[in-house]
Amino acid sequence: MFRLPALNDLRSHDTRSAGGKDLGDLPSWDLTDLYTAPDAPEIGRDLDWLDDACAGFATEYEGKLAALDAAGMRHCVLRYEEIDITAGRLMSYAGLRYYQNTTDSARAKFIADVQDRVTNATTPLVFFTLELNRIDDAALDALFAQDAELARYKPLFERMRAMRPHQLSDELERFLHDQSTVGAAAWNRLFDETMAGLTFDVAGEDAPLPLEATLNLLTDPERDRREAAARALAAVFERKTRLFSRIHNTLAKDKEITDRWRKMPTPQHGRHLANHVEPEVVQALRDAVVAAYPRLSHRYYALKARWMGLDRLQVWDRNAPLPIEPPKTIDWSNARRIVMDAYAGFDPRMADLAAPFFDKGWIDAAVKPGKAPGAFAHPTVSTVHPYVMLNYLGKPRDVMTLAHELGHGVHQRLAAGQGELLSATPLTLAETASVFGEMLTFQKLLANAATPAERKTLLAGKVEDMINTVVRQIAFYDFECKLHAARREGELTPDDINALWMSVQAESLGPVFDFMDGYETFWAYIPHFIHSPFYVYAYAFGDGLVNALYAVYRDAPEGFEDKYFQMLSAGGSKHHRELLAPFGLDASDPAFWDRGLNMIAGFIDELEAMED
Image 1 (tube, rainbow, N blue to C red):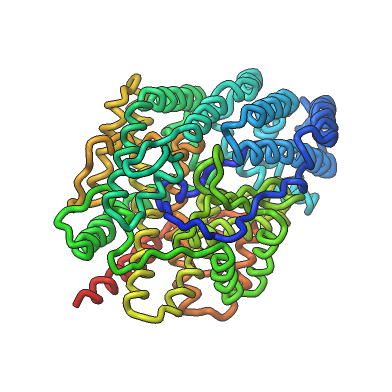
Image 2 (image 1 turned 90 degrees about the horizontal axis):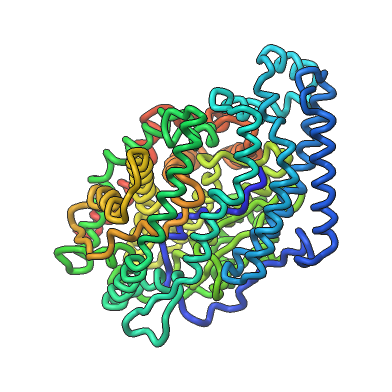
């Protein structure tokens, strides 16, 4: 609990957009629904309350949980939830301000100070999970049977108790809690601040560019500009590779030590537990995607090479616009209209849930100096509302990013009704509404395509996004698996990590690609590896799930919307098997993943047919 908002969208590293200057009035966050200012008296009040509340909670309950009756346990859980909300509110405000300008030393100090206070205050709560996990299953089941409100929290107990085999002593758990601010969290901040401070000398540009603008050039219509950007990225990453190697080595070793003490069978196991998903389901997903590389990415990129009149593709061609696609800038008001029309076309309730993001300062859209790269939707706490961060530059893919993040926001608003402890959705399902929002927007644009060339452009853009979401993310997952396995055998040099990165690139992208010198360092800037190890398979999971869901919607739309809203409103209160059952879907069935992959293959089939 009490985690910072994470830079957790795939577009933070894979689908950059070039944009024009006339994008309209791009919104900025209004964080006053959390706190009015960093020196607001409410912040000091809440920090002091947190100190007292945590100390009081420990005094009243430590060593006594097993003796509580049903009403007492319910009251205990509700008090814990109240503490969680206050701590989450404080950390959300500090984190969102920090991501607006990670190079501002005052903001960096503020987040560090708040994190220290919250960590120190909540250390006395470490006993809570440990003691609950020592209670017999039969005793807990008896309490649930006696109190319906307490029974509502059973999924929370089940998720906590999944960690029972990996639980350490009370003293060690307190130590890990205490040292967290100078452990992984500190290395995360070092990475964020380093990335935000990098500049890139791109040939032909008047001045050095920040990371976001440089990555943005990888989708420029001019091939020379794309190449110049790629080479500028490689030059800086090569200079910084020892630092990034140190960060990866340290975090991987830190995880290995913790996993070893907790007796985790694999480095990925903790992520699977947190996601409430079975390892065999993830393995089935991974295997299905890898087996599909030839009929997905390999086939598509060979097709793209022909469109571009090239025998070979370079890495800077991967996200290049099609030659038939005229440069197009979509201003903010049109981006809003496109996404809101698609949402309303599905169900007016969806547009109603998305509207306040535009009207009430819940979106921060402009590219700004020091602003964190990428995009995310952070739910804050269930008593407030989510905030969306974008780096909007005006290309069609930026519109898809808006649709994606608003999907997260809608999901988070609906799930908030479950309360703080049950609202958080496991990562495997957290991408459902976001990817579905993209699909709605894409299908709306496709239906309105005026010419075959426009339809081809839309289909190709969607296929590229799906490849980035599925193929690239599973390749990233394989890279992480290899990196963490190798780190268990000893320190990794930059060349070692480079080699692991390249081992997944040709396999996933296909034989049509050449890889420039320096591309071997491009692992360095991907934030998922730092902030959320093994997070990336959630994107592939979400895309496959949404493709299967959309097929159900297309084939049997009657009643779908109500079932869809019920699924999103469940938050983290149900397992994926329960959530998918009303749609006749089962993620443990290997055919489930083929169904989603077949949708991508079908789009490529249509693109190939256009060549005849």
